Image (cartoon, rainbow, N blue to C red; front, side, top):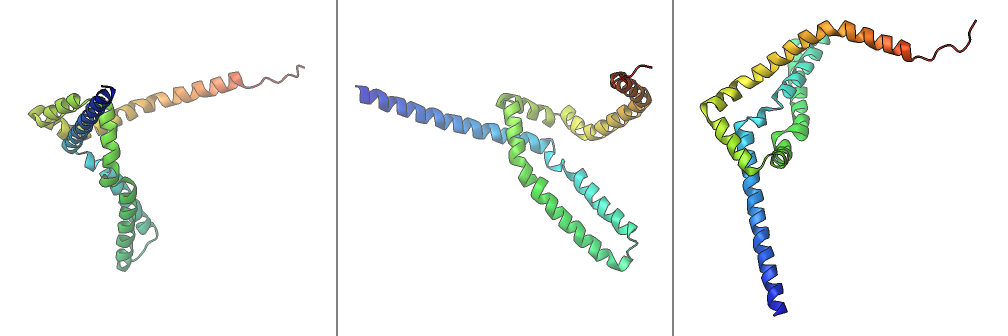
Length: 169
């Protein structure tokens, strides 16, 4: 009878682990679906553009003749290849899937997918990059007015905390 219990337990564990693997695969598939809807594969586009711009600026700074433009393009392609190795979508996707599956249940991911497939969700996806940029610019411009006061407070605190000269006249 004990062998039968062991066998039943082993069969139950095998079935349960199979279900867990299926659940994990489904959870990961939903995370990938959400990431696709959210255009996560485009997250690094600004990085690539910034690097391309850096090479173009350096090309201009060196006052290279137009005939050397092929050299610029060659180096830009090499930079893209280096970026692909570090932050290409095929490199980021597995980590992003883990990130989203560890922070959202499968049910939550399904809800997010349903939202982003809705007209309002599509509008959010369309408007969010510009809203995020505008929000950052707004915050930066407001922050600039506080910088002098914060710098003065920092200076005052530094002066207050500085060791006082122990010699008294």
